Image 1 (cartoon, rainbow, N blue to C red):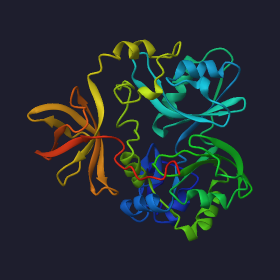
Image 2 (image 1 turned 120 degrees about the vertical axis):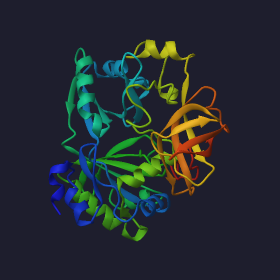
Image 3 (image 1 turned 180 degrees about the vertical axis):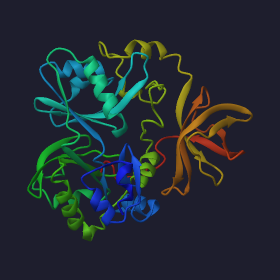
Image 4 (image 1 turned 90 degrees about the horizontal axis):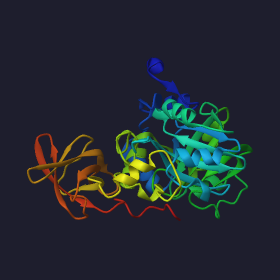
Length: 369
């Protein structure tokens, strides 16, 4: 059972995953379950009832000090100034050449901000933040102290409400509150990576196993079960939620990735603004949603063609459990990004028919319920 001990770091819930016979793999340096039953079953569970994810591998930084807001305005593309205490914001950090350092969520607390970053990028992000900090700005890495659970699915609110006295009915999307879950302090955030109603729960690492058990017990009658990172990937892909390292990276401009909505070019300054502004009318590649018209699955790295012309490459792909067909994301050159464009994906030496479709792939989620 402990053969995997040398293969990666462990979250505080590692022993729970082993006891549940999770299929353990290394992800972001951590040993985490891809699934306990099957990816398809767990995917459908989150779409119909609720699933509980361990995402404690994610990184958390605290940024504080009188210059914290100015610093975050400089280091990110979105407008930090519009955030009120109790609100969260999706954002990206860019290099001077416009490439993406990481995508992240920023939470505004009274007197401080919390940045939630990708597990693979914790060290790189911290170096980048420290390199660019100025004035009265303090940055601390609290990733080891904070555990993170994602309770996702249409039944998530009624399950979580059983364990907290705070009313969750009025908690809006991308808002959060500090409350007690079964008597233990937690930050309850109305966020997630699935396209369903859901919550992300930031809890002291020492107590996260207790909350894990309490949630599974409380949600038993609503069908709640633990779910792995395999369905997290299929769920996010159906929503066109981007994955760093696949769909965006240091060579991707946020405008190419369709992230113009969080790239505020009217801000006075942010790192990478000049390059991104100069590229605005010169974008030659675009992230698209690909839906297969033949029975096949587009995978990362597969080439995209228009007739005999190579026009791009798949960055993420899967067999959609909700739609029953192959779907993917990929970059294509102008003008092949137009919705409805017929394309071909080269799969094991044969070209398979596909088309460009409008995001998201899955449109029946309970996200805003």
